Image 1 (cartoon, rainbow, N blue to C red):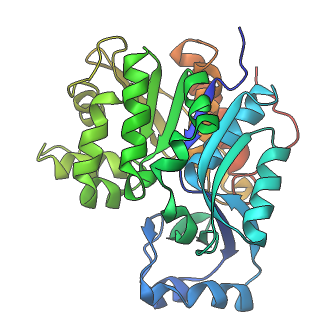
Image 2: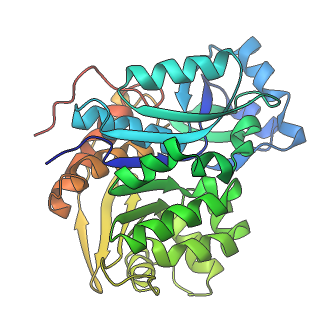
Length: 341
């Protein structure tokens, strides 16, 4: 089976500025543990403060880009994956391009000449991460770039698509174009709930994309927020996963499957009105470095098997394997070769 350019991701490429901070820092900037938010004015000084006061690592990130890189790593076939997003014309952007191409991903960035490359503060306390994203150039993505023949060719070539919910804040029109193409050509379109704020404040654009989603990923907090916003009056993750899988679909080719991770608790997979639970690989607390990129890595591992038409059990196993590797390292990084069987 030809895997070249089989998987296309589209999202916000961000440079992670990652540091182990303290509770005081979180309180000062009004940051909740294990959350993901967009930076407001009050957060802007924190990036410099992190660089000056803490031991900072710079890692190419952004949710979708992380997942695509992990899928690429798991597949070990150069150019099996492609990625589209917007960066600035600066050293961070150049660094990101180099990093992704070295990883084997075929990247086609839109380069904005006014805004700097987006950054994401990754504040780690007790191994748990909290994210504050300053999108900058990532927020400048335009459908015109997607429609350029050399970029639309990537859409045509791919058979699977993955877009994190975060991109709904940037270019819902681009998402719609890819979603409609997938439905019209019986391809597989997948998205992620990504963060509680997406489910709450971007509900309308999320609902517009939902009928096209063949796979919906998310974690337990996002699933519960989704349930509350839709007035479902249930906190039960298994029930919520089933309800999401049964929402209307744009095309009958693929039934929708919902995949919800719950940290150290089992992964919930809902399809055909039924739920299956898959245990994760448990990790002793002392081996946990940080949870940054764990959910992204899970999706990347999952997709690496999905594009090879493997059964759902194998997809979940690969997702758990990739997440387990990533939480033992700083940021969404991995060793040279996977050891997944």
